[in-house]
Every structure is written in C-alpha cells, then in structure tokens.
Image 1 (spheres, rainbow, N blue to C red):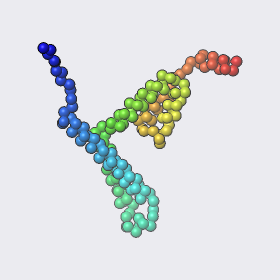
Image 2: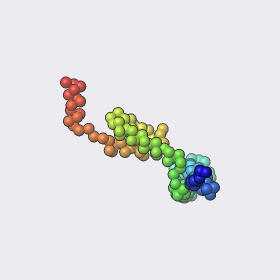
Image 3: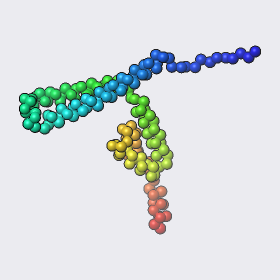
Image 4: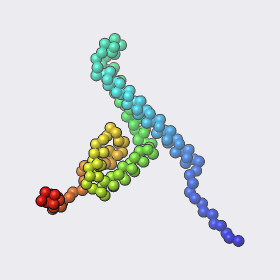
Length: 159
C-alpha cells in the first residue's frame, strides 16, 4: 500500500480574513471621511474668503469663520492620519506595481518610451497618483546618450 503524505498548506484562518475585511471596511470609512472633510474644509474656506450678504445676515464674524476653517482643517488632518495608520489600499498597491513595471519598460526600451513615460508623468488629472510618483523619476534620471553617439546619428542623417 502506498502511503500518501499529507502536506499542510498555509491557509488563511477565518480570523485573518475577518481582519482583512475589517481593515478594508476601516479604509473605506476613512477614505470617505477624508473626502467629506476635504469638502467641508473647502466650503469653510470659501465662506471665509467671500463676503456675501448671506454671511453678514447670519451674524457670523470673521473670528468665528476663521475658527470654523481651523476646525475643518483639524478634522481633515485627523482623518488623513487614521487612513495613513491603516496603510495603503489594495488598489493603490496594484497601481504602484503596474507603474513600476511601466517604468522598467520605458527604461529598457529607452528613447521614445522614456519620452512617453515623461508625458504620462505629467498627466496628473487623468492618471492615478501612484503612476505620477513612479514615472516622475524619468525626469531626473533619464538615460544619457554619449555625445559621440549623437554626433554619429546626426552625421548619418545629415551627411
């Protein structure tokens, strides 16, 4: 009779999965709080900087409004700290990994690929921040081509 050896594989326990779920829920909560508190700060700043008849009718003086801006900024700071304690989201980690792979592709192929990577690094309104952070390194440490090689190419092209 053959004896089958069992191997114990490291599976995640229910507690591990529960902790992951709880961290995900916490992250979602604090990400939402950061967005809400950021909007509240923006609104408080707008009210503070614009003098409108509406504000004067409410009887709010500039000290109260300044205090409101300060409180909104403090609440936003607290939410951002809580989010930072939890760590980066899975989505952020995936973006960072993909951006690093793209950076390596640009560096390996050089030339136009480096230029495309630099262009992507400037598209901060369209591309996730992780791509911008990683691809921005192409501005400072782009590969250099020796003058001799550049001169040879120009000589071949122009004669």
